[in-house]
Length: 238
View 1 (cartoon, rainbow, N blue to C red):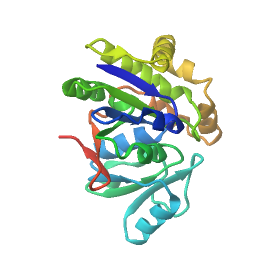
View 2 (view 1 turned 120 degrees about the vertical axis):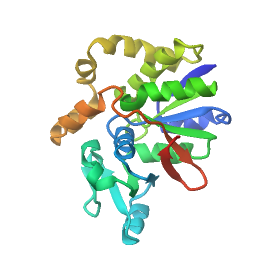
View 3 (view 1 turned 90 degrees about the vertical axis):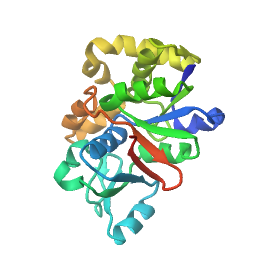
View 4 (view 1 turned 45 degrees about the vertical axis):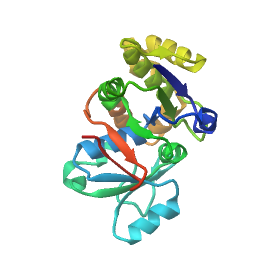
């Protein structure tokens, strides 16, 4: 079994042989972490949509909506993209429509695959265990930033590849090799390593370093969010 890392949604069409593979969409800062936290805190489902227009249409139908563009919460939305906003008292038993700058775009790219999961540092061990139980090849799809490479999502890819490589998985690409090397350098002090990233500077400029710190914590959401192609919703795999 192999683990590949697609470092940008723009490159995903070159991984079109994703049938019978597990695709893990990751957007560490902050969409995938936020979705994991919302589901962990009792949300019934997440309905990811790519566009603002779709999110507004759902809002008009009475849905709770989380919407963000370029780090900032959209003015019509109930939530932005902070994982800390999705508390149990706000989200329990709710279906939440969700759109973000990068993460939900990546989900749309991969929505046709056989098995789509949401990964974050907050659920990395559960994701690894799930992949090991399926015994299928894995593609980590990094949301990046506006289709460009970013550090934090690729670091997650390296961290997951390390966990899987301990149990019968092999690196199958240069991207995975680079991600593993990055993770080995970052592992002793993730916050220090990530401090040189572009996105941490965006978060800092908007007073969101508390979000960033939360997004780098390991195994705080012991769930596996899985996408259903029929309902177009994310729920917790049981």
